[in-house]
Amino acid sequence: MKVAAWLLILLALLPDPARAGAARAPEENGRLKAACDDALRGVLASGPWSPRDSVSFDWILPVLPRLADSATVEAQALQLRPRGTCTVALRLLEKGRVLRRLTVPVRVRRWDLLPVARRELPRGRVLGPEDLEERWLESTQLADGDLVPLAEALGCRVSRYLLAGRPVPRRMLETLPDVLRGENLTLCVRSGGVTISAAAEALEDGRIGQPLNVRLTETGRRLSVKLVAKGQAEVEVAG
Image 1 (cartoon, rainbow, N blue to C red):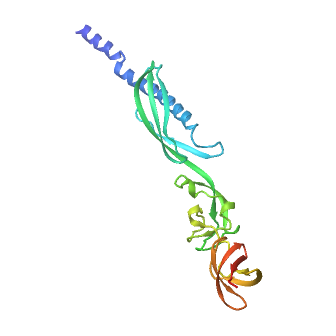
Image 2: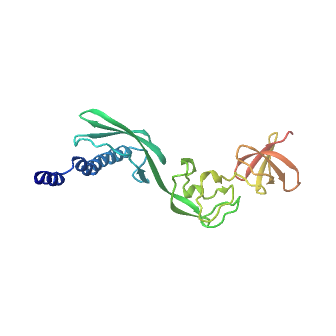
Image 3: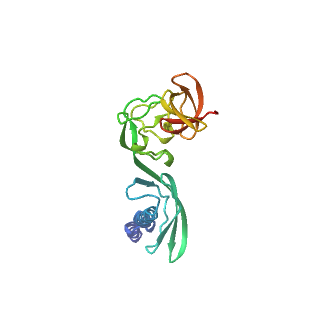
């Protein structure tokens, strides 16, 4: 009985192999996780971003297997986007043999210097320096075509009402026509070999090279003319 009791005590003091393996797992998985993270950063460094871009990357790795210290990780970009979700493939190798393949989604967050409304902007307002300011804002959810520099937004007309503090995307901007309704023009009237100038008023917005309806200031007669430059139009009249 005494011998059996001593054997039970000795067995209790010996380390449990299963427990020892479980204790090592976090360390081994931690090494593998760090290798996966490094591989992801390496492939993302070749993405469509310049050093001036302000971006961050977020990803969550799945549960990783326990591998030998000689295991290596290779990464390959499946889809890289300037913002949104990218996809990167990982291969876990040991002595050149692929042990496991992983597909990791990577969320790309991006910030850009965007024009922002200083105050409420009604629809149709022509934007001036008093209306806009630049701020760094997250642009992850914006399409590349919506990003517009402040200098380009100034002088445009907003197509819808904007709240103060909201960014101004390109899709809400309209370039002004070359002539506005009610604007005064100089009209060159050509008849045969004679050319005379007359004052006219634009009856609609117009662009250079396009037909434009005007009204002669002196007689009130309406004509369809061609806008040839800012403030200038011409028309041919049969002699």
